[in-house]
Image 1 (tube, helix red, strand yellow):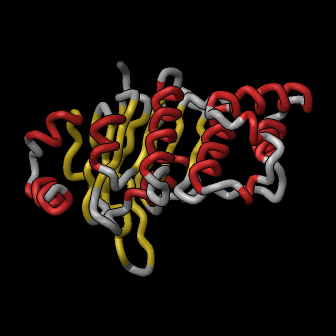
Image 2 (cartoon, rainbow, N blue to C red):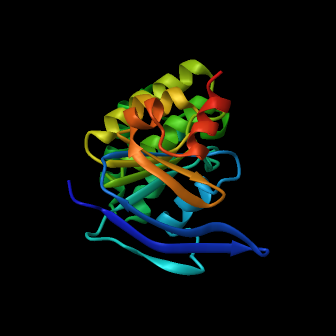
Length: 227
């Protein structure tokens, strides 16, 4: 599989601190999970890749044009129904009202929320809101779905449902995500990118990372996170 993104000496400094420090990285896997300690720069790197932040140095090269969507740990829900939340994103992309509603209903059905389509989105549970956010992204048929800690604030049952949806989306899109859940990383990733203090220190297949991490930083991380 060819590379879909090449990052060359990317850097971002805030308040004199290097948040992202000279990151060079080539991404080619279908499902990549970024791991690292709190404050390592994982979420910042995702936002740079998605274009929400602009780097202070370096560049990103996309060999092909990839349509993207991003889902955050705490999704923003508009003050309207679940269905209208999904329709909104489609209309922004230029779809007609009829097509937007059809695709939105299909997306809600795929995440198991068709029966809650007319429920005010902000009254849904945290897990249901995250599924609406995934439906909103999935309806756009992105080639790359970026996920920032998508289950961090969810209970185990909701987390499992979100994982199922991510697996379904991955059948037709590349996945790039962060998580603190190492079990989730094992289940969803093909490769792991491990960053520490804003630097990429390891990029390996998921099995190798958990069985035989190559760097001391990754070894210490796993020792602390896995009792």
